[in-house]
Amino acid sequence: TRWRASVLTIFPEMFPGPLGLSLAGKALEAGLWALDAVDIRQFAGGRHASVDDTPFGGGPGMVMRPDVIDAALEAVLAPGERAIYLTPRGRVLDQALVRELAGRPKVTLLCGRYEAVDQRVLEAREVEEISIGDYVLSGGEPAAIVLIDAVVRLLPGVMGAPEGLDEESFEAGLLEYPHYTRPAEWQGRAVPEVLLSGHHENIRRWRRQQAEEITRARRPDLWARYLERQTDSKKKEA
Ligand code: SAM
Image 1 (cartoon, rainbow, N blue to C red):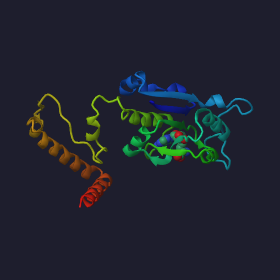
Image 2: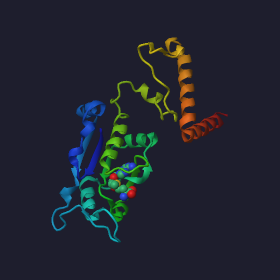
Image 3: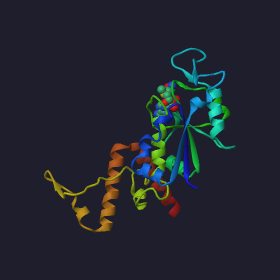
């Protein structure tokens, strides 16, 4: 069965948005994944006509009501399923988590707006929390788009050349090596000799070395983890 994303939002018109174009859009059209955007406002009917209300304890902004969010979750979650709330205080999305999410049959993404979602519904529904980085967006929708985009390109049949995936930044725990295309000389700058050599083993070694240098210089955090993993795998070999 194909991978499915259900997005709970007060702006369903933001979807598919960029996900309807290019690689993700073609895959969506081909039925390699499915998307539904569910309007949270639909669940704010009756006595409580709005999605949000003022925060207890005062302070700026509005808070999304637990009863409305719960009704929306009830409508889209199968028994035992959990939702993901996109929030700056969540586990930070990285390629390992993207891969894990791609391995699930579906994700249900709750997009916040205003100041927050009432804490009680997050607890009652055991909602998972994911952040796309240490900065604050005005709403969860762009974060949902980022998460879905990263997952979709890993789904079977979506990328033309699946071997390209392993070479990529982060798959090896490294930043990516530099790329070059024609012309072989441009504004007095030549393409590195080795890439024109046709010697695949040398090219592979050169790329690995470049990736290591760039990672060491730019991302000491990734570099330390990379070295740790290398030591671990050597220990396992021994
Ligand atoms: N009061 C929140 C705080 O201080 O962390 C910020 C709320 S933000 C203005 C509104 C919504 O945007 C959040 O509820 C969340 O759904 C979404 N959002 C903002 N930044 C995000 C991030 N880095 N990752 C994922 N979602 C984010």
